[in-house]
Length: 167
Ligand SMILES: [Zn+2]
Image (cartoon, rainbow, N blue to C red; front, side):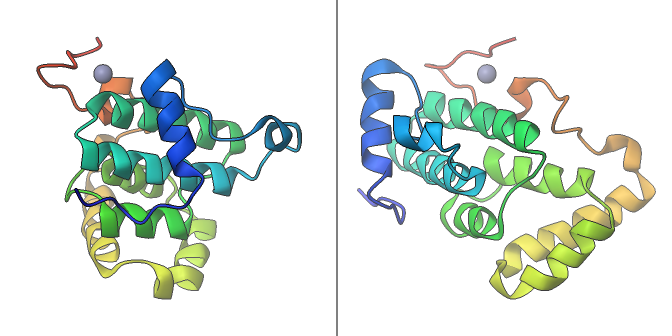
């Protein structure tokens, strides 16, 4: 079995998920210090990739739910590192790639443009290519850009024989 590049923090998070169905991305001390959103989001991204390797659809779905909640609360989106992880390690067209793209599409503004300019060397070419095509489409068809904050959870879920549609 091939595991994605994973830091040592991810295994205990996965074990807790496997036993309790809960995702806890920060220890009690980190929680008290309000651990950096970027660190938590990075761990969640790695957990998603682990769910992918293990065929754990429920875990992938739980992670996209958590990332949306985290990004909404923190008023931010995917970091360059999270984007790199999900593009290099995720299945092509997976729901987390979709969520990342939708975040950028909903953030078509000067700040995002500056940010992309500063971080492009760190961002995967496949992501930049997808984003260029999607920006082009959004330019003439902005009504069909998915609002990642408001979309139903199933938008970023996978459903299969073990995980029936949730709504
Ligand atoms: Zn669902």
